[in-house]
Amino acid sequence: MEINYLERELTVQSSQADPQGRLSIPALFDLFMDLASSHAEKLNVGFDAMHGRRAYWVAVRTRLRLPGQRPRLGEIITARTWPGAPKAVKCDRFYTVAGDGVVLAEGRTEWVGQNIDTGRVMKVADFGYPLWMEHRPERVCDEPFTRFREQPDPANLCQRYTVGSRDIDMGQHMNNVAYIRMLLGTFTVAELENMDIAEAEVSYSMACREGEELSVYRRLDDEGWHFLVQKPDGTTAVQLALRLRK
Image 1 (cartoon, rainbow, N blue to C red):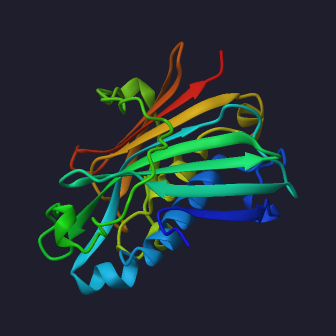
Image 2 (cartoon, rainbow, N blue to C red):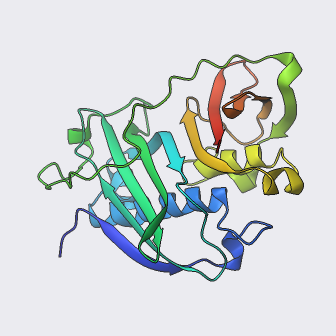
């Protein structure tokens, strides 16, 4: 059996549905994360294996694209993930979610291995990644990631958020998807219902820890919504673009 990809048939559960009964945006990011974690175990770079090498993996950037309608509660979907050939320190992972043979969502994550003790980014060859593996040539969301240059504007401050235990993952920092939930939580149900999201792209810069009070800035332009999350020391933690269908 090929180990260079993972495929699962799943049913959209009520815990994954938004108020309109669609697979929610955070649930899609959760699905990507869970698929990546499961496949990493098969490649011997799962949590325990990485921890034994004093390493953990960190998402740097993710792009989620929604070519059509999101799957609904009870719908059977086929979710797939596979890694791209790694560079010296950066790795790509790709995802698709399909229903009845039609791609409903696709994504790409850029990630790195980081040393637990020093916090430094590691070379791929140093944390046990199977460099011998033949990588599939298929790629999605393959255009360059956005170089965000958003700056905090006091007029755009929409929320102060204190990181709680609910947000912390096994790496002892705020989980990737917790940021997505926090940012989408700045909208009302009615606003989200009327929002036709075509793409979500997130860039993670600095880890956030329990107890930190984050400043969330939000603005709207012709492309869609832009978010910037600022740590108490003024550094940027996360930026997110929600691009709306025209």
